[in-house]
Each structure stands twice: as structure tokens, then as C-alpha cells.
Length: 259
Image (cartoon, rainbow, N blue to C red):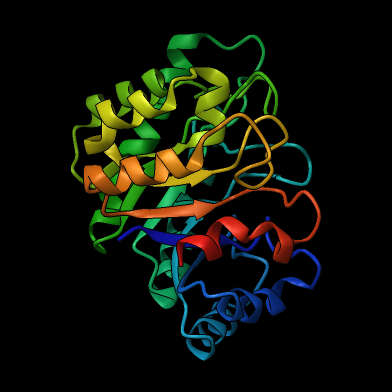
């Protein structure tokens, strides 16, 4: 039985953020995620989860200046101390919220910086985060994001790069966050990618392509992909991280047809 989560950053934007927990529960979701919790009091968020009988399954490590255009700092050599402080802050939130896994964003490739230095910095930071999270039985996820459409210059933009980091760190507490939308843009053939690498994947997000809208609006056959993941025995979460083409409620036909 597949476990579907609602990404509250992307879905239910019709209402303020703190009201989205209730709407997700009313639509039948038992699991939620969102990009970042740090703008809100962690106890307030925990109360909303409890009130609505929801389990939060993921959020991201602090990304640097997100509003200013930064998309993570894990590969940036001059931000190591900030990255480590962010890991500690994320652990504090994860413990209160009961979140079992955190996602790491590599960041954008800075100009005039040696590739070897960026790679070594990423490995050092991912190893540190994995070790710190493991002390609290929290897993770390590493997400490749497409650099062709959504995040030009994103450092960790292919599945091969993410798998190379995972192999270098060699920890069972480090997994890949596989976003079907991003991987369709960068690689295509996502069905075979999922099948070949399922043992390394700890979380899946999805949106259709092009447009990053709900299943059924683009080129991907999500009925097939969901059936395949179920048949393969995928045990982790599948999170709806898409921009509704119209309203969130009208975008959820795919979910209600499954449930």
C-alpha cells in the first residue's frame, strides 16, 4: 500500500500556511511535508499535526537566503559553519515534530570556484549532517534538482551525482530523494531509473511534466508509475509536490481515485 503525502508549501495555497494542515486532513491525507518549518514556532506546528492526526515526513535543512535566491549551501566552501549550525537547528525541529528524515539541498554553483573544492565541500557537509542526524535516528536525504528549467546552476542536478555522493559517504542513513518531475527533465525514462535505484531511494516526490502540475496534466503515466512502485514493494512515502493547475481541491482527482 503506497503512502501519499501532501506538500503543504505547494498545495492548499488558497489559505494561509497554518490552515493547510486541516485541509490536507479533510482531503484524506495522513502524511504531510513542506519545504521549511523555521518561520514558525515548532510547538505550534507540532500541535497542528496532532490536532489533525497528521504525520510530518520531511522538511529541508536551512537553505541560506531562500528569498534572496539561494537554494541551499551544502556545496559552498565559505558557508561550512552556517551549514553545521543549520543541521543543529533542523534536528531541534525534527525532534519536536517527529520527523524521521531531512533533505539536503546542495545549492547553486558559485562562479570562479574549483569544481574539486565544491565537491569536497559537499562531501564533508553531507558526511557531517549524516553523522549528526544518525545520533537521533534521523535519516538524511540528498535531492538532485533539474538545472535545465527550475534551478539553473543547481550543483547536484543529476541522479548520477547524487548516487556518487551516497557511495562516497557509504552510510545506511543517507538516501536519495527522487523527484519524478526533476528526473524526467534531466534523464527521462523515470520508470527504469526508479526500478534500478529503488534500494537507494528514501523518498519520492512527484509532479507532471511539463508545467509541474498534478498527475494527468502532462506526459507522464502516473497510474503506471504508482502501480509499478507498489509492485516493486516501495515502502517509503510519495509526496505530491506540484503546482495545482487550477485549485488544490480540483487537482486531487488522482488521489481520490486511489483512495
